[in-house]
Length: 606
Image (tube, rainbow, N blue to C red):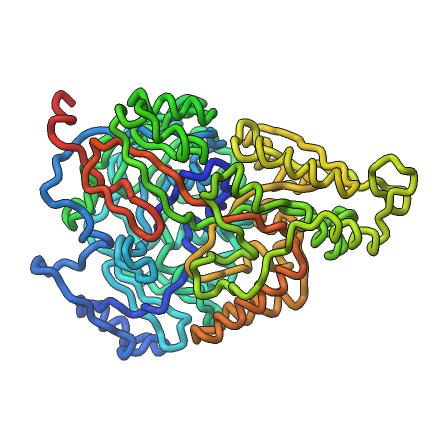
């Protein structure tokens, strides 16, 4: 599973985007099967020829190496704690039904996927729970071999209070995952889209399965390899029956995580903290990927100034910084005395203003274009982000080959915007300073998140510009949990959020018309466009990279013209971490903390 970044306070990163890892790569066939039994099974499968096998170098231990083992320090002292803040508590810990970034991160700590992207070469998948995989020539079938000897963690049953001993991980747990996601009684609409083309999972034995897809899509590779198991014995009754509606509302189980990964869930003190302890029986210990740090604590600290003070006082060890804290406060003597290391990188996410397209105010794309021209992005980047952000004009990462740099951003131009609104029939007929059309005033509310430092400064500036063009933009501030709920039910007029930009674009979940009317889907603005659908679908079936880039750029030009979002900027992730931590390494997508360790003097007495 891809690592989850937490340095952007607001970003709504739905579980499908994070947990399932929608970015895809070309380096498909990297593994081989050493087991003669698997090869015998392969001979029986006409759709999976032996020519699909590609070898990789083996370590001297003859084991299939695990992802990112090269970055772990073999001589790192074992133990110690890392304390980090979270800005909002999560509704529950069940990532199948909870589209929250923090829930996804917590689940990732306790679980592993079949494969994981290499930190230094994110275009390359490397094995985790899967020791090997094979891909059919038609790219619709994946034969996967699991590593032997992996167990689910023990846990206390929330109903009986009995301890449940570790049970082996099997291929049935992967089939169970896909069965649950595709179960119509389960509230998994955001995640379900990635498995709508899954035909079936065929179980050969406890360690071998074939993942079959209905069509040869480019994204099949990623959706297969980033698949994670779900503990069937935890969610089914004693007779093996599963109840999807109970799964949604099982508050006891949804406050727990039972995993097979590097950490164990210990406790969740609502609106206070979550605690995780290292899984000493983690299978990765034998493959050189056991995290050195023993304890992870996530403290709920909502306000950024409070988080900053906690960082200076060494009550927390790592945190994201606001642009003001990064540019000004981090240069103070107080910051230097706290022995903190600063690091930043261009994040993999973009912020936007989204218009509910079911609202008649926003039906005309010329109106949406005018609204974008009323947002002074340069001023926001200069005065609020302190130049620690870059303007973005579409949903793809600016440093990606898919990003079309020839597209110029819509300018900040109040006069041109007002003229365009007038051409659409919006005029101030009664001279009260607010435009109107067909008896309706141009008034709308934009949702804001409580205690969000960027929004608190940005939205009043936008409101001021809107007013100059005769638009009354009201700011409605709500708590994060309320925000998410209103987003899922489309109970908003305008929102401002963020999405992650994958390595390879897969716009279906956010932009395809089929998702526009599904409650809880990522297409919460209800965008529908026939041409966009055609490009999205064509991109899904295209494997040639140059053609993929051409299609993606055509899609980006369409979105730029339609302006269903006002695309704002890609911010730099601004962070500080205690200098006590060693093996700090920065990669294209961040600085993963699972490889950090503490010198022995900071572990003594634990």
